[in-house]
Amino acid sequence: MISASSSEALSLCKGSKYCPIVDVLPEEAGVRKKILFRVSGDGYLMVEYGQEQVFDLMDAFRLFTVMEKLEEKKIEGVIEYGQGFRTLTVIYDPLKTSYKDLIKELKEVELEVGAPSELEFKSRLLHIPLTFEDSVTRKAIEYYSQYIRKDAPNIIDGHNIKYVALYNGVTVDELKQKILSTEWLIVHQLFYPGGDYQLPIDPRCALEAPKYNPTRTYTPEGALGTGGQCYYIYTTESPGGYQLVGRAGPVYQLAQAHPDFKESPYLLKYSDRIKYVEVPEEKLLDIYKAVHEEHSSRFRYDIREERFRVKDWLNFVRREDVQEEVKEFERRKREAQKTVPVP
Image 1: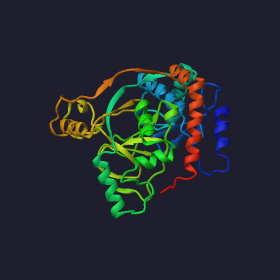
Image 2: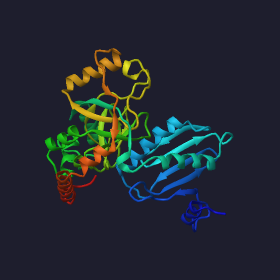
Image 3: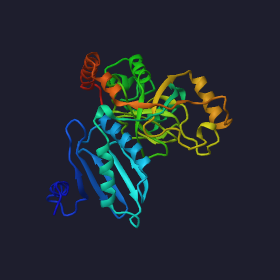
Image 4: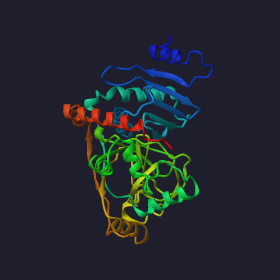
């Protein structure tokens, strides 16, 4: 006998000779989106939350809550979890468990997790120093302008920050204030070691920007960039295509010689929140010296262990004044983007 969830999985695969969807946990209105279970080879299972390709912080909040429960549960045969923005990849040993048994365990955890207002999870708050329009990112942008694309519309007065402000319909000072006033939630870690996608907790600070075209061949360590709706700290020197607004403190150290990197070469973790603190460039350069050259405790990151309660966030974002400001900012962005050229 085919279960209702298996039957729905088959219907989603209709017309496809090869379909990885093997099970579905149906949507429950007001609680969770439809959850798809996809197999990949003998040792991988992907759990997908909803089918809409959108950034929804509620997806991240639910995943963080589920992950906390999974870490406590310690399912036999699971080697590692790989968390995306709205997906969870489970790497498992097929000699110790099967994807069917895994799905059963995962469903049990999902059914334990309640409505959005009941979600909560561990979330460290880190204060990260930031210098806007610093000389190091300016040199990288100058190199790009000189050797890669002389007519790049995203470079104004030798930097990207004015372009990002124009694209969002705000002044440079307003842009800086939006970056500094909100906390940035790490919702995904990706293609570069310790790299992180950050989204603002405050929807009034939801900034946007297109990427470079073509990309840079060089980006300095610590550069703070933005592409689409995300912000990102470049962990090491690398190519890159995000618009640069400044430079943050170091968040990666392979040698793990500084006290803040003893446990891991990566400072940032899933579900962390970043609060940027503006500092003069002289101080930022001294921080890099203390961390990478001296490995000295004269600089330590301010890191606070906290719990994030989604109920408090919902009460904030549902306020009438916040909703009105979000609508007005969206209007300003759309008007600005009608005239601002895209690279």
